[in-house]
Image 1 (tube, chains in turn green, yellow):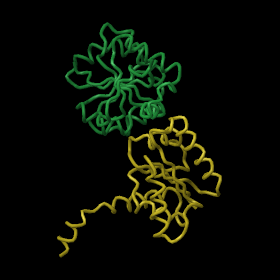
Image 2 (image 1 turned 135 degrees about the horizontal axis):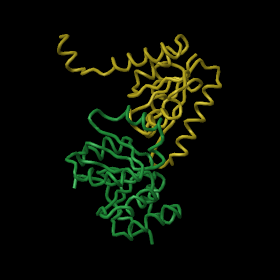
Image 3 (image 1 turned 180 degrees about the vertical axis):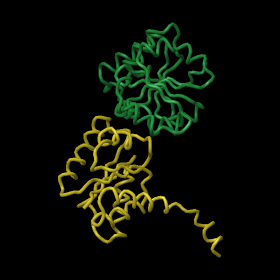
Image 4 (image 1 turned 90 degrees about the horizontal axis):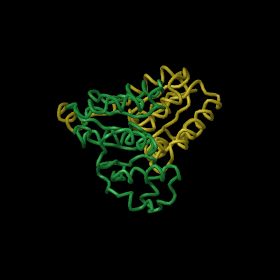
Length: 159
Length: 139
């Protein structure tokens, strides 16, 4: 299935994604799934302008992303699905018939530092609740900023 | 005078100012500031720091603010574009190197924002040279 990476990152498309993940998973397309950003014209325009040549960028609201999911999954072009927050990822997965095997939790920069420090209890209650529910759907939480970081299984630390 | 703001991943920008001070021979911190962005800093805080420095520099008798970021498409540049991308008194250049910082500091009193950003951009691009090849071809 050419959805090669599911990622939660509040910084959306930035250096870690473009320089790290895109070449690592050989992605030709990044799709940001978010009702909020799908209508954020200046963010969309800025992102499109600074993206590397040849990388397709799309901002889709939840409903459009859901209806286009099978088409994206069948497309030969490798796609990264990007969510600004755990809540968005949870909402999207809940709408699908299939589940990803794992989601990369890479943004939420402050939270990621807490992961490094082993202070998982400091995640915000809403984030923790959404992440716990994602785990409950049978999805692994692979916490790391870049492909080169050591993967941390967040599920072990949300209890 | 055009003020200068360097926004980078890590403390790169602060060290560029420190290095430039030794070359231009004066403390540039009156007209130039650096903002470091790391994964430890939440995004809201990043935006707040950029907005605060823009306000401070705009208030300091400036004719404009030249912003130097490290990477096109990186968080420092992305957030700066969203905050100040439409401001006429602000120019944003990426790929900051020491030549660009020096060029900006040396020319900031003489040039307005538009001329200064052209000059700094040209100087920055001229700074990237394959030095060994240059020497071999000139030998």
